[in-house]
Structures are given as structure tokens and as C-alpha cells.
Length: 63
Image (cartoon, rainbow, N blue to C red):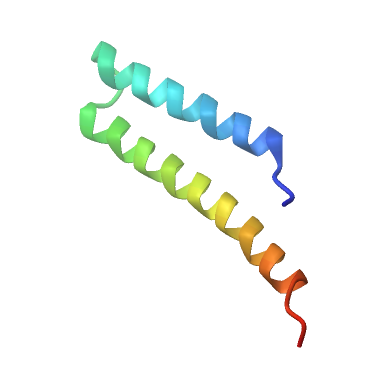
């Protein structure tokens, strides 16, 4: 499993920032904007981890 930890740290930073902006009621954007950002960060993390598991399955395939 090869995960880029710098990309995961970037996703964590973006997720924290968008969650903090949503909770604090930031004047930059609205709650929907920051919730959409959280959804996109979640999709990015999901894609990051799904690529890793596909590589592991290919290595163990005997055919």
C-alpha cells in the first residue's frame, strides 16, 4: 500500500479549514459552500485509498 502522506495531510488541512469555516459562520462563502468543500475532500480521500487497494489486488493475482 503506497499512500502519499503529503496529499493526505493536504486533505486533512483542507477538511479542517472547511469544517472550521462552516462552524464559525465565516463571511467568506456560506455553509453550503464549505459543506461542498468537505464532500470534495471526502471524495479525494476515498479516491486516494481506493487506488492503493487496487494495486494490492493486482500483485496477489496468480494469473
